[in-house]
Image (cartoon, rainbow, N blue to C red; front, side, top):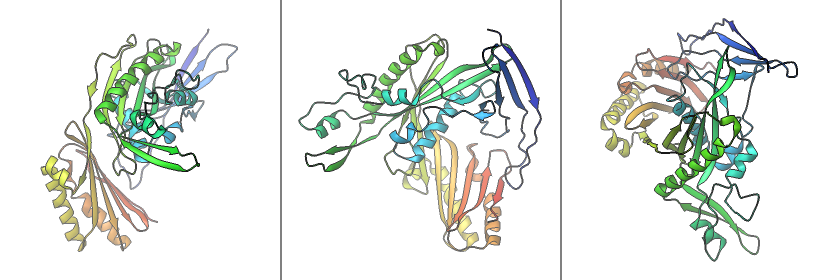
Length: 393
């Protein structure tokens, strides 16, 4: 098969006003692949890099279009809340950076696993049913009633998410360079039963998190073996991460609890890296006990803002910690009556009070909201001046 690759560069400028200043954007890359006379030419666009502290992956666009995973949408049916879904996806990208450098790899939604395949894997295993023989969740337990059987053998695995990491060069073209798989595990099993008269009953079962993690690692081994059986994944490095969901209606997302990486020739998982990821609200007793210095700094910040404002202000902070270190702080203001000049003054004042909250070299995001909606945003990165945006409408 004859293949011809050419990479073209297009300079582009980025103009941001009143938002995040001094961001730089790299050139857009276009990789043209000719696969021979019988296959049409394909064009892959590598999106430009915007120089931000998050250092997000550049994405691969096929013929100028974003390629959505065929499995996208299945996640919403298995996971219990939106904040879990968002953290699951973003967290997987963060985990990938340890193995797949943003300088050498580009992001693409998963294209190896189909939606039908993921749905089959999420089913309860039943060797007697061809539709369920691929299920990774445990078969029904013993018991006199369906409720008892389901309680004894809860569905642990709620979703499987795949991310692809792509490499592109003149010699090899655009090719898969790595794959990251996320396995979302339940902390509470919600299920429904029906009686003989057609009435439905909703149930929930708190799960033993240590047992859930144990089952998750066993499921991960089976997933790796199934992936390795696919021809397109021969020699491809695989990272697997376990995500522990929160309860339904929780105000904080779930967290990643363990991960493992296999090189291109490995199939057996030999070890796991434990991840200690936690969320704390400020002000709260739990935050004061776990991180007293951070809690005191937040209290001083809150007091200073209320003294400036002249009345009590609804301020809530949420810190994300990994292995005991602050990864990011999010602060939300909820105001009642206000004037636009007051919002501008408050935003300016708050932006000058964030330094004590960023002593752990973690970014701080401030969202000032009112009964009318978002009013302003402040972003404070370590060793950078704060950036602000005030909404005009």
